[in-house]
Image (tube, rainbow, N blue to C red; front, side):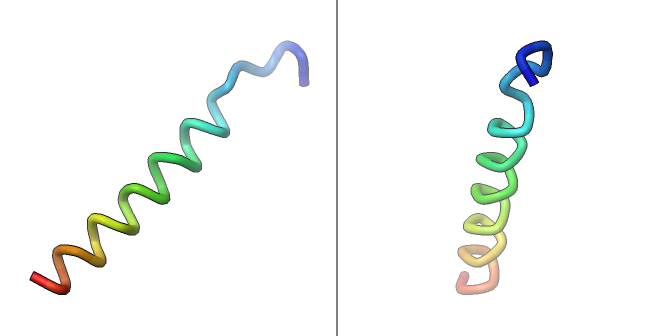
Length: 28
């Protein structure tokens, strides 16, 4: 775990942003 970089967190953040973007696109 210590060797693992903060990639999972970034990925989760990106996923959340993507989901929000998709929602916005659908709304648009």
